[in-house]
Structure formats: C-alpha cells, structure tokens
Image 1 (cartoon, rainbow, N blue to C red):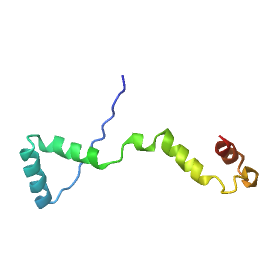
Image 2: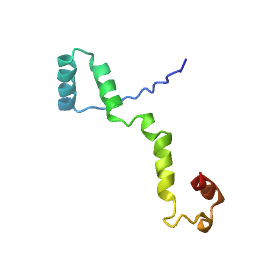
Image 3: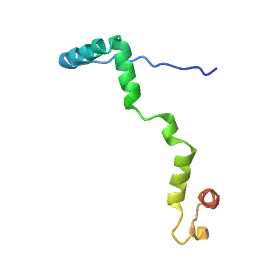
Image 4: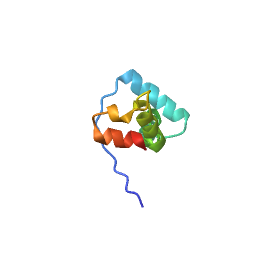
Length: 83
C-alpha cells in the first residue's frame, strides 16, 4: 500500500478571495478545506504527465539531425540516444 504524505501550510487569503471560495465550496456541497485542496490538486500537473513516453520524446528531440552520435562528447548522452 502506498503511503501518502501531506504537507501542511498556513497561507494568507484575501477576504474577497476567501468569500468567493467559500461560496463556490458551498455551491458544490463540500467543505472549504476540501474544495481548496481539490482545486489545488486539479491545478497542478500530474506525475504521469512526465512518464516514460515523455522522457523518450525529450531524448529523441536531442538526437542530432544527421544521426551521427559520435559527434556527441558526452558518453552517457550517446548511450541514451542510441537506444
């Protein structure tokens, strides 16, 4: 089972923003705390967006156009690009 670590932060929210968030949370039938947590979770990029296929695309974009890997001085990069 995966353990989820939560980080607690004390933040300052302007009164008009607080009121707006409170109204939206009430409209959606949830607590303000849960509404803010959910909004922040939805606003951040997911871990899966940087998965293996994304890394492969990044590595592929570093490959020289002429595909001559011997021109690359970094042996580790040469190895990665050869795969």
